[in-house]
Image (cartoon, rainbow over all chains, first blue to last red):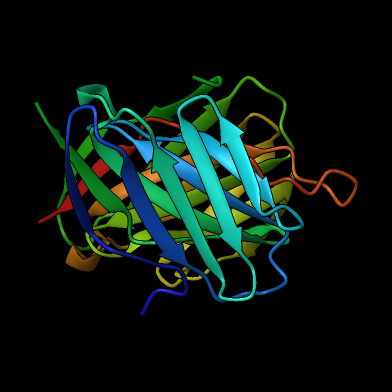
Length: 109
Length: 116
Protein backbone atom coordinates (compact mmCIF):
# COMPACT_ATOMS: atom_id res chain seq x y z
CA UNK A 1 0.00 0.00 0.00
CA UNK A 2 0.89 3.66 -0.21
CA UNK A 3 2.88 5.30 2.56
CA UNK A 4 0.96 8.48 1.87
CA UNK A 5 -2.81 8.07 1.69
CA UNK A 6 -5.46 10.19 0.05
CA UNK A 7 -9.04 9.66 -0.97
CA UNK A 8 -9.23 9.13 -4.72
CA UNK A 9 -12.17 11.36 -5.69
CA UNK A 10 -13.78 14.64 -4.64
CA UNK A 11 -16.61 16.45 -6.38
CA UNK A 12 -17.70 20.00 -5.53
CA UNK A 13 -19.84 22.76 -6.98
CA UNK A 14 -18.23 25.82 -8.50
CA UNK A 15 -17.84 28.49 -5.83
CA UNK A 16 -17.77 26.03 -2.94
CA UNK A 17 -14.68 25.23 -0.90
CA UNK A 18 -12.78 22.01 -1.58
CA UNK A 19 -10.89 20.17 1.12
CA UNK A 20 -8.46 17.44 0.12
CA UNK A 21 -7.06 15.32 2.92
CA UNK A 22 -3.87 13.32 3.23
CA UNK A 23 -2.22 11.20 5.87
CA UNK A 24 1.47 10.50 5.86
CA UNK A 25 3.68 8.17 7.83
CA UNK A 26 7.11 9.66 8.41
CA UNK A 27 7.07 12.01 11.38
CA UNK A 28 10.57 13.20 10.46
CA UNK A 29 9.45 14.60 7.09
CA UNK A 30 10.80 18.11 6.85
CA UNK A 31 8.50 19.40 4.16
CA UNK A 32 5.10 18.36 2.90
CA UNK A 33 3.86 19.27 -0.54
CA UNK A 34 0.81 19.58 -2.70
CA UNK A 35 1.18 19.08 -6.42
CA UNK A 36 -1.45 19.58 -9.11
CA UNK A 37 -1.65 17.56 -12.32
CA UNK A 38 -3.81 18.63 -15.23
CA UNK A 39 -4.69 16.17 -18.02
CA UNK A 40 -1.74 15.21 -20.19
CA UNK A 41 0.73 17.22 -18.15
CA UNK A 42 3.35 16.69 -15.51
CA UNK A 43 2.92 17.63 -11.88
CA UNK A 44 3.19 21.25 -10.87
CA UNK A 45 4.13 22.33 -7.38
CA UNK A 46 1.12 24.05 -5.87
CA UNK A 47 2.32 24.80 -2.37
CA UNK A 48 4.32 23.32 0.48
CA UNK A 49 4.58 23.62 4.22
CA UNK A 50 7.55 23.31 6.52
CA UNK A 51 7.03 20.77 9.27
CA UNK A 52 7.27 23.30 12.11
CA UNK A 53 4.26 25.21 10.78
CA UNK A 54 0.59 24.48 11.44
CA UNK A 55 -0.89 26.50 8.63
CA UNK A 56 0.10 28.23 5.45
CA UNK A 57 -2.13 30.44 3.34
CA UNK A 58 -1.47 31.42 -0.24
CA UNK A 59 -4.32 33.29 -1.94
CA UNK A 60 -7.16 30.76 -2.32
CA UNK A 61 -5.10 27.91 -0.90
CA UNK A 62 -4.84 27.01 2.77
CA UNK A 63 -2.65 24.16 3.98
CA UNK A 64 -3.22 22.73 7.45
CA UNK A 65 -0.75 20.41 9.12
CA UNK A 66 -1.50 18.29 12.16
CA UNK A 67 1.81 16.66 13.07
CA UNK A 68 0.38 14.70 15.95
CA UNK A 69 -2.06 12.89 13.66
CA UNK A 70 0.25 13.08 10.59
CA UNK A 71 -2.59 14.72 8.71
CA UNK A 72 -2.27 17.29 5.95
CA UNK A 73 -5.09 19.07 4.20
CA UNK A 74 -5.46 21.44 1.28
CA UNK A 75 -8.40 23.80 1.18
CA UNK A 76 -9.25 25.59 -2.03
CA UNK A 77 -11.60 28.52 -1.49
CA UNK A 78 -14.11 29.56 -4.17
CA UNK A 79 -13.31 26.52 -6.29
CA UNK A 80 -13.36 27.15 -10.03
CA UNK A 81 -13.74 24.79 -12.99
CA UNK A 82 -10.07 25.43 -13.74
CA UNK A 83 -9.22 23.79 -10.43
CA UNK A 84 -10.39 20.43 -11.80
CA UNK A 85 -7.28 18.25 -11.72
CA UNK A 86 -5.56 15.52 -9.74
CA UNK A 87 -3.95 16.71 -6.51
CA UNK A 88 -1.04 14.82 -5.00
CA UNK A 89 0.15 15.01 -1.46
CA UNK A 90 3.85 14.26 -0.97
CA UNK A 91 6.27 13.99 1.91
CA UNK A 92 9.97 14.61 1.71
CA UNK A 93 12.29 12.16 3.38
CA UNK A 94 15.68 13.67 2.77
CA UNK A 95 16.26 13.12 -0.90
CA UNK A 96 13.28 10.82 -1.41
CA UNK A 97 9.84 12.20 -2.14
CA UNK A 98 6.88 9.89 -1.46
CA UNK A 99 3.60 10.60 -3.19
CA UNK A 100 0.04 9.67 -2.46
CA UNK A 101 -2.11 8.11 -5.18
CA UNK A 102 -3.73 11.46 -5.95
CA UNK A 103 -7.21 12.92 -5.43
CA UNK A 104 -9.20 13.68 -8.58
CA UNK A 105 -11.10 16.91 -7.99
CA UNK A 106 -14.11 17.49 -10.22
CA UNK A 107 -15.73 20.91 -10.15
CA UNK A 108 -19.30 21.04 -11.40
CA UNK A 109 -20.77 24.29 -12.74
CA UNK B 1 7.41 25.13 -17.09
CA UNK B 2 10.95 24.64 -15.91
CA UNK B 3 13.33 23.83 -18.74
CA UNK B 4 12.74 20.09 -18.82
CA UNK B 5 12.21 18.18 -22.05
CA UNK B 6 11.31 14.53 -22.23
CA UNK B 7 11.58 12.48 -25.39
CA UNK B 8 9.80 10.76 -26.90
CA UNK B 9 6.38 11.91 -25.69
CA UNK B 10 4.79 8.64 -26.78
CA UNK B 11 6.31 5.25 -27.49
CA UNK B 12 4.81 1.90 -28.44
CA UNK B 13 7.11 -1.08 -28.35
CA UNK B 14 7.05 -4.84 -28.17
CA UNK B 15 7.87 -7.07 -25.25
CA UNK B 16 11.56 -7.89 -25.08
CA UNK B 17 12.83 -4.85 -26.96
CA UNK B 18 15.14 -2.27 -25.39
CA UNK B 19 13.78 1.23 -24.84
CA UNK B 20 15.55 4.43 -23.84
CA UNK B 21 13.80 7.52 -22.59
CA UNK B 22 15.60 10.83 -22.44
CA UNK B 23 15.30 13.75 -20.08
CA UNK B 24 17.04 17.02 -20.84
CA UNK B 25 17.18 20.03 -18.51
CA UNK B 26 18.42 23.56 -19.03
CA UNK B 27 18.28 24.56 -15.33
CA UNK B 28 21.66 23.12 -14.29
CA UNK B 29 19.98 21.40 -11.33
CA UNK B 30 22.06 18.78 -9.58
CA UNK B 31 19.32 16.24 -8.89
CA UNK B 32 17.35 14.42 -11.55
CA UNK B 33 14.73 11.73 -11.07
CA UNK B 34 12.72 9.21 -13.02
CA UNK B 35 9.24 8.35 -11.77
CA UNK B 36 6.51 6.16 -13.14
CA UNK B 37 2.85 6.96 -12.71
CA UNK B 38 0.25 4.22 -12.59
CA UNK B 39 -3.44 4.45 -11.68
CA UNK B 40 -3.98 4.08 -7.95
CA UNK B 41 -0.26 4.24 -7.18
CA UNK B 42 0.63 7.88 -7.56
CA UNK B 43 4.23 8.40 -8.54
CA UNK B 44 6.91 5.90 -7.67
CA UNK B 45 10.61 6.62 -7.87
CA UNK B 46 12.59 4.43 -10.26
CA UNK B 47 16.10 5.91 -10.09
CA UNK B 48 17.63 9.23 -9.32
CA UNK B 49 20.91 11.01 -9.92
CA UNK B 50 22.78 13.41 -7.66
CA UNK B 51 25.45 14.35 -10.14
CA UNK B 52 27.26 13.27 -13.28
CA UNK B 53 27.77 9.51 -13.13
CA UNK B 54 26.22 9.43 -9.65
CA UNK B 55 22.98 7.50 -9.55
CA UNK B 56 21.01 5.45 -7.07
CA UNK B 57 18.01 3.15 -7.01
CA UNK B 58 14.52 4.14 -6.07
CA UNK B 59 11.51 2.21 -4.90
CA UNK B 60 10.82 0.36 -8.18
CA UNK B 61 14.19 0.04 -9.89
CA UNK B 62 14.02 -3.60 -11.06
CA UNK B 63 14.14 -3.84 -14.85
CA UNK B 64 15.46 -0.29 -15.29
CA UNK B 65 18.88 1.28 -15.61
CA UNK B 66 19.95 4.90 -15.88
CA UNK B 67 22.90 6.93 -17.00
CA UNK B 68 23.98 10.51 -16.55
CA UNK B 69 27.04 11.47 -18.56
CA UNK B 70 26.25 15.19 -18.55
CA UNK B 71 24.54 17.44 -16.02
CA UNK B 72 21.72 18.20 -18.43
CA UNK B 73 20.84 14.67 -19.59
CA UNK B 74 19.42 11.72 -17.67
CA UNK B 75 18.57 8.56 -19.59
CA UNK B 76 16.25 5.77 -18.50
CA UNK B 77 16.70 2.40 -20.18
CA UNK B 78 14.45 -0.62 -20.15
CA UNK B 79 16.82 -3.36 -21.25
CA UNK B 80 14.03 -5.77 -22.19
CA UNK B 81 10.61 -4.18 -21.94
CA UNK B 82 7.75 -6.06 -20.32
CA UNK B 83 4.02 -5.35 -20.33
CA UNK B 84 4.21 -4.41 -16.63
CA UNK B 85 6.38 -1.47 -17.65
CA UNK B 86 3.53 0.10 -19.59
CA UNK B 87 3.18 3.39 -17.76
CA UNK B 88 3.62 7.13 -17.91
CA UNK B 89 7.19 8.09 -17.09
CA UNK B 90 8.07 11.47 -15.62
CA UNK B 91 11.42 13.09 -15.27
CA UNK B 92 11.89 15.63 -12.48
CA UNK B 93 14.66 17.91 -11.28
CA UNK B 94 15.42 19.61 -7.99
CA UNK B 95 18.04 21.71 -6.26
CA UNK B 96 17.92 19.69 -3.04
CA UNK B 97 20.94 19.97 -0.77
CA UNK B 98 21.67 19.55 2.94
CA UNK B 99 21.93 23.32 3.15
CA UNK B 100 18.64 23.79 1.30
CA UNK B 101 16.60 20.66 1.92
CA UNK B 102 13.35 21.90 0.41
CA UNK B 103 12.94 19.25 -2.25
CA UNK B 104 10.74 21.18 -4.65
CA UNK B 105 10.43 19.04 -7.74
CA UNK B 106 9.89 20.34 -11.25
CA UNK B 107 8.44 17.84 -13.68
CA UNK B 108 8.63 17.23 -17.38
CA UNK B 109 5.51 16.58 -19.43
CA UNK B 110 5.87 12.82 -19.34
CA UNK B 111 6.37 9.93 -21.75
CA UNK B 112 3.51 7.52 -22.36
CA UNK B 113 5.07 4.08 -22.92
CA UNK B 114 3.03 1.13 -24.10
CA UNK B 115 4.62 -2.32 -24.18
CA UNK B 116 2.59 -4.77 -26.25
